[in-house]
Image 1 (spheres, helix red, strand yellow):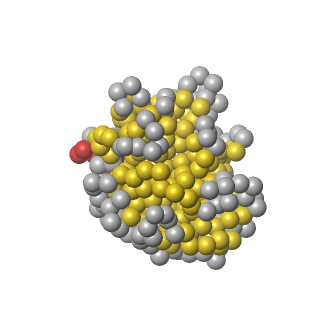
Image 2: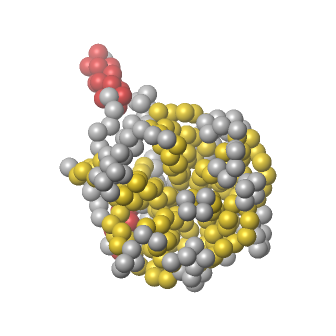
Image 3: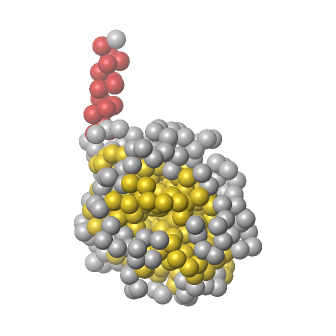
Length: 306
């Protein structure tokens, strides 16, 4: 009995010591030693701090937030709107003086807003996406620094991924482009050397599939390509895309793929797959190689592998 208690204490202590590497397909722990619970989410950076918001598998998909200064050790900032449940794939935007969350609830996009980045998010309204009020599932977010514009990405039941501008008042404006011709979801977008890259997954429920990348020289499209970002047999290393994070360091810029490794029900057994991407803007390619353990110096952008 004493031995089992000692082992439990040691296990808890080891979880609280802090992470040294990003290790995919395993349970990640916050600075309190509890499993991180932020699936289908995204990250924004404010100053030297990264804020990660995602849905809680443990607490009925309420939006949870964590913060970190190194992408390794994450502090739990708690539920951001505890009365809101069934809120899938939340993403943060700041189109004006307030902070906004956009996520999917009951097959439509629901916006929440707060005067501060952390906490006190209140329901704003159900979003009707121009030009047609389709039923939407997955949401993604992209911020274009050049134009100081936020864009909401959505995938719909009618197999269209579309990109809409977020207006300065937080409402969703005109559709600027769309991707058709395939059953895609889980959209994410980033820009490298003047080229926009749109990453999507196929629609296979909770089962992983080969995620694909499309490219365009304007956010208005047209979108071309459609190659796998990882070897087809690997099925994106058992994950589904949720967000692309850009780290602009003093020595190099690194682009990070953020994915979820879902269990059979998208529940508490789900973990995470984060990996640096190889991006060639001239060749219009994005390649994802698997590395069990890696880390990034967020100041320089330099990646180290073990």
